[in-house]
Image (cartoon, rainbow, N blue to C red):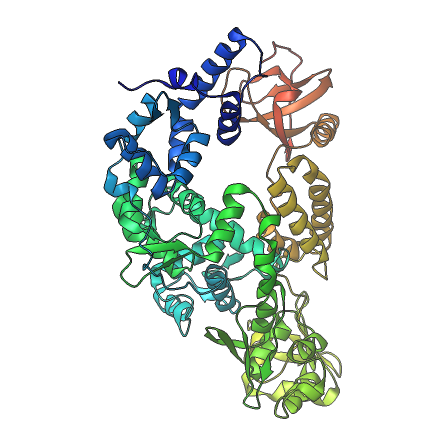
Length: 635
């Protein structure tokens, strides 16, 4: 007859009880002396030891040897060997009884759900898995960022077009399947590191550079486990997290895939077909797990262990040593053919800076770039100064190959020889001779240029001056680069992006308001000075989460006071007392009285009172308000 935890715990010494409490981390009251105190202690211990979740988690943490020993004691009365017996008794899974050891009734019932075949999930000593490439997941993310520096075309659904998908995979040893490429692309896009405009997507370099290299992999891994990824036939998010949790608990072990999945299925509903047939192979291709050729055994890779450890345990410091190679810059070789070679395992920031000024050719253990006149001009257009361009290619001209030196000198001489003033459609030439040449070039006929001074020409035609000048072989002075430019040097964007990433991650969004106010101030100045530039930036401002979170009460009060003084309408984001979600209300503020806003509600066509604590946002409208004299009750 099976005995309960309470009956068996009576046979334990105080020292044994203490060990069980420590190993199972039981939330017990202080120990009391005397018979009644011991009875209360044993009852409390039994309650926690028999808790279903506590018991299931404890069994799930056991290795194959301990599980089989428990099963043998229940079914065959076979006593475990000394080392295993000690580990099981310290966990309270086996307890002493007169003449031997016993498994408590609730533990035996839980074990009955386990098939013995599912318990034997540790691989045999001769089982060997193929080592996973180091940092494979991080490098796969970097490979997509590198390919997108020059921009790729996407479909309406947001995924790369077929031809562009081939570009992502072309000579890319880090991604070999289309599904993997689109999945990695989607993870990066959801992180806000890719920017889409007019059917094309490119890498939002300021956003990438604002974060440490490890942040990209850590957040992408979190999205891999949390996001809705039904399009890739992956199991639900809770199953993905559950599987990674148990792989982490068995780090360093080689596991037999099918018995291991069978064991997990007894603990949690699991779609074996999608978990074993789709998710685990994906993890292998991304280098997060190592598997043998037949796919029968697996082990968590070093990179997968670091990412899972950070994600599940929120322990960033514990894995700092793992990320050291991605913080360093490796040597590079620039050959006379203008082919640039450098290792892939290094700071992705450095690789992205190289991709700005060279075409990405091959992505493997070594990354190959091709420098060309077109790539250098593209870098200048994107805002990389000529001095910075030289520095990235080599610290001094002595390190640059001879064919590159005249190319750089020629570009330095030609860049800025013409300047396009977009606001007034003027082209300014470096000298009168060049201005005369522009007037007679047939490629520029569409511009219908006319001279208004020796060096300044007016554009009277419909053509795009910058595009046509480039096609004719001229290098206009680069305009101000606007990836998400809020100031000339990008400093405000980079600083704001880094701050917001920090406060979002730490759950400190209430500290975000000073940053929002600063960004809004810059936007207002831009709106007044250059409305076209303001519209361009407005498309990208959502990257800064300016609309996220509640509005500061002080700011709301200022807007309401201003609207009341000038009889203007505002739009309230309001949570009524009896509602479960916010509503948008258009009102004309009359004044603030204590904890309430008195305003005319244009929905109810009457004057009403709104609690200030329930107003979550205020937006000033450029519309005249109206308010009669009647008053009504508070809502």
